[in-house]
Length: 239
Image (tube, rainbow, N blue to C red; front, side):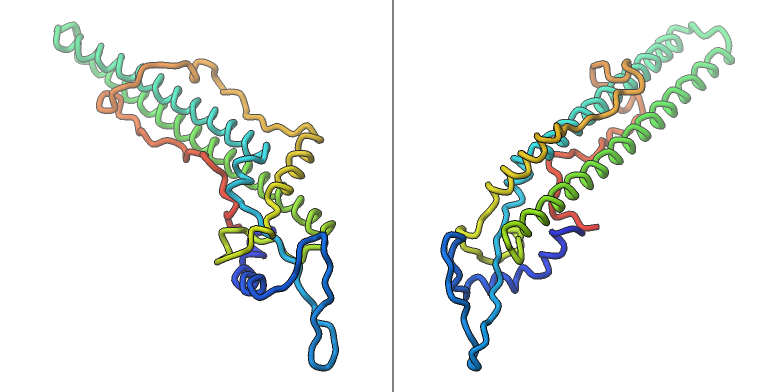
């Protein structure tokens, strides 16, 4: 999977190289070491990034998280509204039954069928909405990783870096090799230049997003499972 997967395989080797390396910063040049026969030894130019910092400060990542949180709120609101509707109808049925207001068995059975249909429809709607949100999250994650991958390839090439590692993939690496801030600045400059922003589809029915009081699960029979919270998109995700 993009640059992260490739460089992870080289992480431990790179850490050892860095600890033994005598390379200086970008503003200095040193003569390459030579072997016993006088041939120059090729040295690797390595830097690293802090992926957590990138996820917290890259505007695309922040926009995606905000968009997914809005979708999460939409799911919560829809679940509460459907639950309230079912609970209200179920309570009305119970009151009619206790007060002997059902004049025929057919009338009672008809309301039972209606209640069951309301529960089934609500479960199907919420399941479809949950799947839709999960699909959007997956696509957004691919978009984010591709964006970082493409930038890092150009960035490393322009800087002449042989490797750019993830900080979490190293046992130790000197902070002087940290290029996180520079990468974040470059990512945001490119993202802002193209006017990037994420959008989420509008709810199919505005009424579903209306705020409602929480419903009693026992009365509604609805699942309380929610879509995966997208608090942070994982830079370490593998294909």
